[in-house]
Image 1 (cartoon, rainbow, N blue to C red):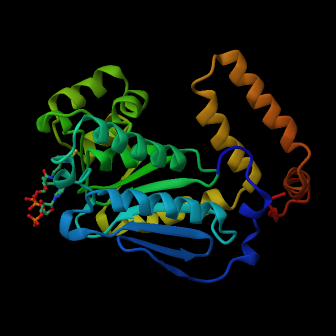
Image 2 (cartoon, helix red, strand yellow):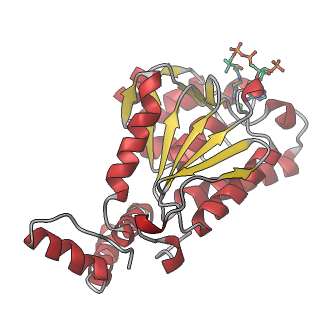
Length: 280
Ligand code: COA
């Protein structure tokens, strides 16, 4: 999923099959009109991420990368939680080496999601705690229901974040606010998460999925290769010195000039009609 997407990843809407549901134990994957809705489905444990669920997420991310009928992903949770964290029952039995291995496995999966060449929107419907907040932060954009709650409560359990929270939270909300959340473990409501920039927008609970779908449709109306390279430029460029990042941007700009979609997009503008992008 990294880098410039394979041609096979990017196909026009006319080639999308209608709906499919793939078999996972604790994930639901529904694909409608090129939008995959991936639902963490372990509601009796508030969608806590056990090792099996992390492995399923890994497989689902690979599946989504490889499916030509998927242009973007909305990630959400079943029931009253988005994800209430890593599974504390499993964490309670870990020692230092398997603890480190667990963290590295989760980090790798979340990073793969973050480096997806297909846009990923978190639709945060409820509790996003610990690994749940970390999962939302690994998505490209976050929309929240007004009932959502956020926290990095690991210090209350005698641990720290393991799935990227100590790194992505300060990058998103700034060092001081991140440290306050990380060191107190306090839970904040959706309005506060919006105020500090942790989420892009707030919605009444029933409007959350329609809003996420509308945003994804707006994105998927644009040129797929351009979308993929914007994602790559932001992901790679933010950790580069500015001059190198600007070269990366210029390279993308030049690369896209060779695409059929650039010709189509500009021709459509000049002809005062909507573009028909083909993803090449
Ligand atoms: N790991 C494992 N199980 C979890 C879990 C987690 N992170 N979060 C919730 N659950 C389980 C509970 O143990 C409970 O299971 P049970 O019915 O078999 O006892 C079930 O989910 C429902 O949770 P419950 O605590 O009864 O709901 P609540 O409404 O009273 O409280 C929370 C909701 C989110 C405040 C509370 O569950 C909580 O604090 N969870 C842990 C959050 C956390 O620390 N996450 C970071 C982990 S690193």
